[in-house]
Length: 476
Image (cartoon, rainbow, N blue to C red):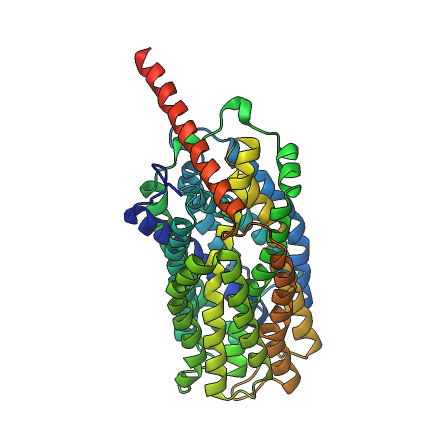
């Protein structure tokens, strides 16, 4: 397979993508990991109201993603169609992220519920704009499967650092020995610091990566929003992928949201029990160590098979977490297994990149925004499903929101937390693997390689037309 002029992505560009991933995920991971524990344990919102807020928010979440994706695809400026949104909306994302955690602690349950719901909607609006344009920008850089995997590797490293920082700062600075409400000021300080860092790192991407101008659609090539979504949903490859990605998204949201409960309420991490943090360290270390292994497997087996086998590894680790008797060695090993399998998720968006390539051959237009937006329409409700299941399980297992010094959660709540972190997301991934089995784009087939060759030819033709248009403008 011959590589066209732009298929090789410079190392500098990959680093800028890594910085952007760190900037986006340093706040995203804090949101996913600590918002539930902050609102339930520090602000004291009722778990059922917590679940209700996320279920209502899911309605807006279903509307904004394809809308913003479509708008992004149709944007034309001298800076590109993705970069302007990163420049403008990244600081607004950080501001709305901060607002979410300044709900008045001395207020009624319905006031806290309203604050949570409204701030979720405003924060998610800017998150959707930034994340769709960021992921679309990276996906457009190359159609070469190995280059895409490397781009996602650098983005995964940034995500890994964001994940580690988002977990470690609260664990190191929040005191579990005092009443939970007294941790509010420290948590809000962490939120402000990470929000500022997130905006700074996203600026590296906004000002450091250049878009490919030949991929901008001409006016006659633009599709209406309903026709665009219809074409996306009619794509069999996309449907099988999106079902799998929904299950992976549930896994990510569930681990992020329930791991803090597991660390603080099951393993009892504290200043005098620092060894209890070993499972978290194991997860982080093996997630990062798994990246080069995933790249090697991807080169040999293709992204579909690599994702399949890494997901099986994740399932095994999750089940062991649920069944473990809190033996620190066994729990640490199971977290290492989950981390190693979890690193395979860096390949998820390479599947969508292949689907977009396939669509471009049919429509002649690059529509990353439409596909990432419609994909988010399907998989982001996994956040609301995860939050709803978590709140319901915590309620049914008699989780105690106001433990005193030296008190432990009841055994039912401990088991509920293990279920939320282990066997429940494992069941979701098993369902996802059934869909992945029917995903038709296999990189080892002749049809796949021929599809890639045709896309390369199409891109070269678009580049030639762009140069001709620029030459005519220069002549005029």
